[in-house]
Image 1: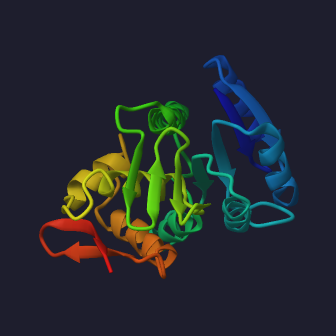
Image 2 (image 1 turned 30 degrees about the vertical axis):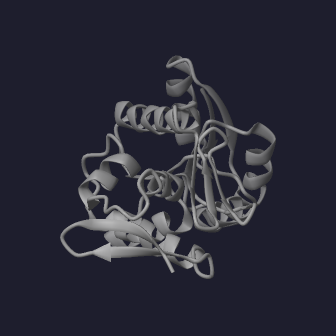
Amino acid sequence: MRLLLIEDDPALALTLQRSLERKLMQVQLCDNGGRAVEAWQAMQPDVVVLDLNLPGLDGLQVLKNARQAGLPTPVLILTARGTVGDKILGLNAGADDYLPKPFDLDELEARVRALNRRQSSALSPTNDPASTFGALRLDRDNRALYLQGAVMDLSPREFALMAALMKKPGHAVAKERLLDLVFPEQQDVQLEAIEVVVYRLRKKLLNAGVTLVTLRGLGYLLKAE
């Protein structure tokens, strides 16, 4: 596994690098937010571990810039900020997991591997690699959602949610089921996290001819306008 660690604390960065490399991961360090996206594009890592408090550019802005640049890599945020509001900010910016400091090294490794497994699973061929609904076409092999032939800018969580809904367009998928698919192996994530992903998707589906509908007590479904 190739991992990009964006952390400006030299002691912590070195500790994490040595620990993860002992777990047979290839770890590259970046200590400045201003250079982070460039390092990300050059390495094309399997997972990014991102600190929020960085010199040059704040970690949230680094993440936003990376998503705008079309980098879909799963991201685990490390931060001393641990409030619900900060977690929502991170998820809105395109993060996939959130680990407040201080943390256990074994937990960090487990979360990184979980993100990599989910990414690998999403990229694996299936018996139904493509789904269409209205002007949307979801290609599971290439892990991309197309709107009238153009690739949409989706985070890994947004893609996972759309992949679940487009298996059976017009049929409701329970919020609990979506939580398992979008946030696998994360026991501490609340159902409200799905609402954050749905909120982001609704904005991206404007003018797509498709609506993401909430059915109270049943879940979510895709409906043609």
